[in-house]
Length: 219
Image (cartoon, rainbow, N blue to C red; front, top):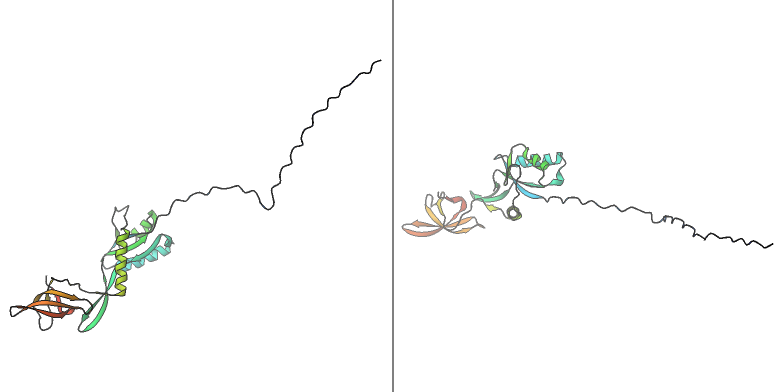
């Protein structure tokens, strides 16, 4: 009896599945988040605010207080009343005082938004902004702001004379031996607070040195 051959077909060997790689304890897998870009913040600019005449200082102080109360210091810089120190010699005595060189106006350094606009506009004794429109004010240029700030600094370092005289200007003597004489300014000495005035004496032009307090502009 013939032997029956039985063939056994072996199934092909399959590679074992790879075990998942465990995340390192030292380097946890963190999903990268894209940073959202915030809109650029508006810069602080100088704006001119019109106030009731004579109330500039009070408006500035009230505005500073309101900025603090509403926690808006981040959107405001300086609040200034443009004024300068002036000097004069009167009765032989040197005196210094302050004079506003932009009466009726307050300078405000601010970031213009609807909130800051409302805060300034509704401050007591404020009439509004100068420049642009009522709803959309425009700032002064940086060059204009620098010029004003420079004048403020110069005034602190060296007070200006109370009255400015120019060569060629006609003045009248109001005190001293030449009282009521009219003449033309030939020279101005701001260090000594004196002017040299050409006055006609006996028909001849004669230079006379007078103190600022002894003359006034002849209008």
